[in-house]
Image (tube, rainbow, N blue to C red; front, side):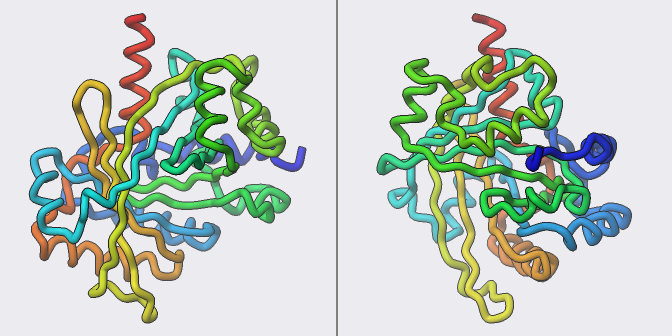
Length: 285
C-alpha cells in the first residue's frame, strides 16, 4: 500500500518517542534542549517539510501575556476541534491522532497524524503526496516529529459526522482512510471511534516587525483552548523553514523574554490535555 510505513520504520519511531517527544506535560527545566537532543534534532531537520516552534504560557501569566503582546481578542477566530479515539485512547497510545475541525465561516478540515515518525524512513510515495506533511514541533525542553495526512471538509459535514448522521469515515479522503488502516491497531476502524469533544478554541495572529529572517516578516499565532471544566491553555507558535529554525527560535525567545513572557517551565500539549479530559468524561458516563 502506497501510504503505509514499513514496520521497521514504525518500530524505530516508537522506540525513540520517549527521548524526543513532549507527549506529556513535563518539567522543561530551563527550557533548553540538551546536547543530545540538539544532535538528534539537527538530524531530523534534514528530512522535514516545516518546523513549528511552540510555547505554552503558564496560566498565571495569561493575562499579562495578552496585555504585552499586540493581540486583539476581538479579531480572534472561533473554532471547534473534535478528536476521535477509543474510550481508553488506544490510538493515541499507538501514536495515531484522528482529528476534525470546524472553522468560522462554514469551513472545516480533517487530519490523521502519526507521531513520532522518522522522516527518512517514510516511503517516497507518501512524501511526494501534496496532502502529506512532515513537521517537527519544538517546545522548550523537547520536540517531536510527526507525519500528517490532511483533508478538506465543511463545518456542516463535521457536525453531521459527530451527530451520527453520516459515517465518520465519510469526512476523510480515500488516502486518509488508507493511511489510518495502515497504522491503526488491529480491529479499530474509523467508524468505531468515540467522539472526544468539542474543544472550543480562539485563534488569532499578529506580525512581529522586529523578528526577521532572510528579510521575511514573521508572525506569531496565539491560540486559547477552552476546556469544559473551565481550564485553558494559551499557546504561542510560529512556523518556519527547517534551515531557519535555530535563528527564528533564538530571536523569538529573545522577543518574548524582553516582553516578560515566561519562556521556560512546564509545557502542556493541547492534544493530550483534551484527550485525557474527554477520556475521563467517557469513563464517568
